Image (tube, rainbow, N blue to C red; front, side):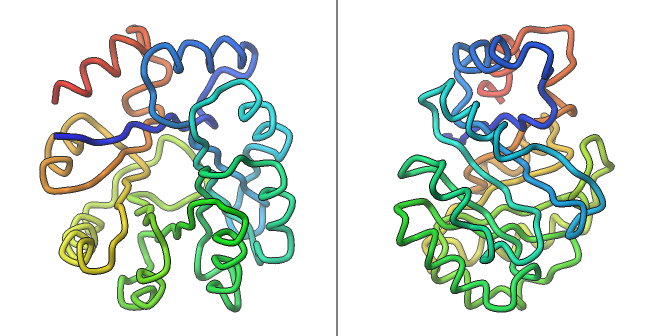
Length: 218
């Protein structure tokens, strides 16, 4: 059973960011998840463009950039100019008038196009975009803050998307309140990757290497 593990870097210790990146790299993390918030689309500010640039310079692992911003098309070039080909950029369809235009810019820049789906967003409203993206990030909590409670009805949405995955040719990722129990349940069903934050990875007594080793055994 193969699945990816992505480190949610908004949960990292920023007093020792270089060390955090190095330890996660050595522990075998698959990619670094970067949450960018503008205080408008979500009621919070998180990582900055400069944070993203620094992490990109400090690791050879891919970056997953999750844009929780209004009208990403207006400033997508800022991110695309600072990323490497093959990095992933997720947008929220509700945040843009014509999300397919923004996704095409991501594709043209050589990046991996993705959409993030909020708990309150139905699969039906993003159905057509599933044909043009390579990755779908399902939020199991409302976006904007770490450490929120899991919303159980999201499981039904995951089941719907798993049934479409092969036909639409996308990979499916889980973001939010990601525990060992949920990885054990959904990885065998076909979820391709999980974003690890404070629920399982950061702020624990074990080393990152021990935690990631344990998760991969699930």
